[in-house]
View 1 (cartoon, rainbow, N blue to C red):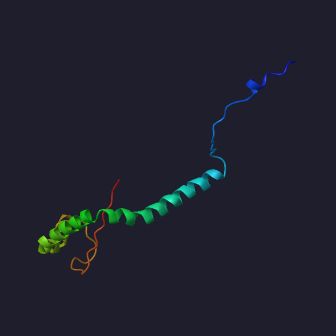
View 2: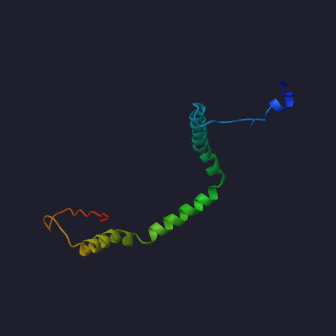
View 3: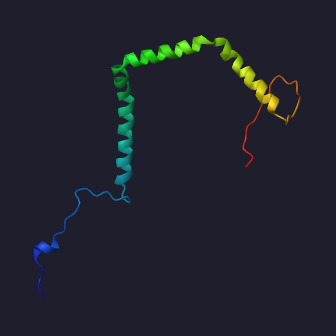
Length: 108
């Protein structure tokens, strides 16, 4: 029996192999998650300070919309409640109760 040449015995392998069944994989995943969370937490103020003009313009637009119709906003919940109560056909309890509880559910 002749020995095989050395060239045939050497196999090429990948530089990094991560096997899912080892204990290293969850540690690497948790480490990556922690680094991502910390980078997002500490990096967000840096990104927000770079574009203050866009934040200012969006806040001005939202305040103008809110101040445009405060009376409309106050009447919307009342109108919505009146519509929902008007469409409901199955009541339990006193119809003149001070609190009305409406439950929405799926019958399937």
